[in-house]
Length: 169
Image (cartoon, helix red, strand yellow):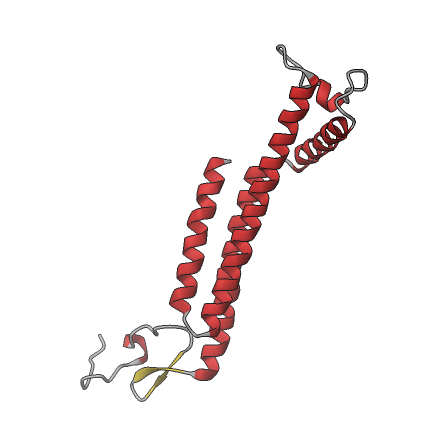
């Protein structure tokens, strides 16, 4: 059993936890170390940005699905766009488009649906990219001002938005 001899005198095992990794124990209390602070802010920035990147990567995988399927959809969109650019010729329907001609849907309707889905997919990926990059810029800006709590809030906010996007996928 450890006994504290006097008020505010701590044995190493009984010392309160440091407020952050940037604090050092000095004269019986935790003090912010400027040298440690810069390194801690850099490490914290890397940690928060890595969390944002990982969440965005997971959402992108949820949106895109299998990478080979994504390539298949990309090829179908190219063929549908070429078909549209040629004026939807009835005698030259690409295979990717003709596969979508079912239940009374025309080749033109199939091509338009493929293009609409491709545009939606691209829009979602671009929105995700914008969210990720904007959040990382905010994190770095807050940390440059020494405001780790604001950086954490920026990361938490974008992580919540990314989770919502992922649920919609």
